Every structure is written in structure tokens, then in C-alpha cells.
Length: 144
Image (cartoon, rainbow, N blue to C red):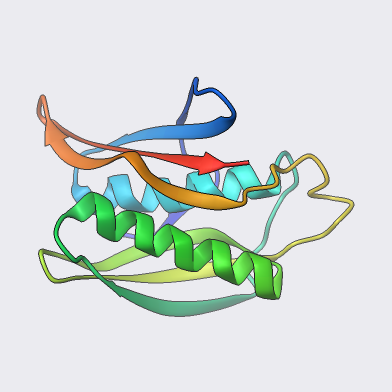
């Protein structure tokens, strides 16, 4: 299933960092919402329209949370180098070996997205992507 901005997420209170937490009925939904939370943080209140799509793949290397962070790091790299922001996401594969996602990107605009956060990194600290209490929970911390 393809998810688009806006998607619900909660801000996590954390000293000197910015954190987001999401829930989903599946791991794929929770991961898509983490991707789109990064997009929302980068875009601020500015609207985004997808101008291109790309399929990205990352190895899981141990656990789903680590794989989620690696995917978000790849997306942050795209923002830093190409000034593109994720605004749609469809997780195509999510298992113990790899994550594959089809991501739609919108072009960053310095005026429209001026209130977006200056995210420097996605950290492994406190990262989660796990089933708990009948729902999938995801969270990450961003260095800002």
C-alpha cells in the first residue's frame, strides 16, 4: 500500500535532538510512516508534490530497527545531495534480510520549506520497529 503525506506521528521529547514515533497495523505501514515523518520534518509546513519515484533497498543487518535507520539515512543523504524530500512511500519488501521501498520525492524549496528542521543525522539510539501490544511501533531520533 502506498502512503502519502501527511501521516500521523508524535514528536518525542529529547534533549538536543528531535524524535518521532509512529504506529501501524503492519511493519510496512509503520516504516512508511517513519519515512514520511522524516519528510514532514524536513518540509516543515510546506506542501510537497512528488516529481520522481525511486526504488531503494538496504540490508537489514541484524534487526528491523537498524534497517529502518539505514533507509532513513539514505533518504537524508538524498536530501543533502539532491535537495529532494520523501513524500510518498510504499514498502515492497521488509524481512530479516532487506528492506525495499518505492519512494516518491518532492523538490525542496527554500521559501516554501523554510520552517523545516535542519536534520544532520538519523541515529540508532532508541530506534524501534517492533510489534508490541497488537500494533507495530516505530521511532527514531534525528540529530538537529
